[in-house]
Image (tube, rainbow, N blue to C red; front, top):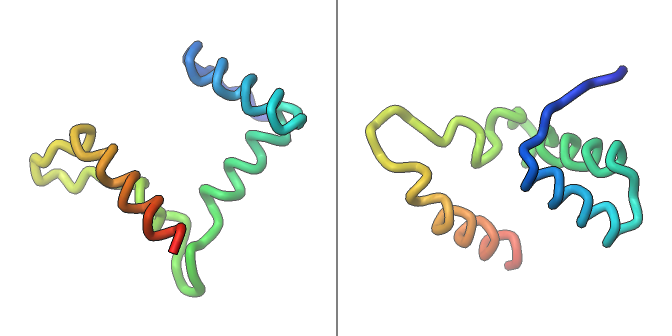
Length: 80
């Protein structure tokens, strides 16, 4: 299947840097990212249980203002 996606300049630069560092094609890097995003965290969970999909619960909280904190917490949990 072929999929066309428009990327912002900054994201395209980051993708190019990733591909250069890990010596993979852009297609391979995107496939890896999608597989990781869509992979269930545990049996019985769906891709929609990913911690950053649907973060905005509509309660008026500032998700963008909390993203760094959320990422740090997630990173710390994954390193244990």
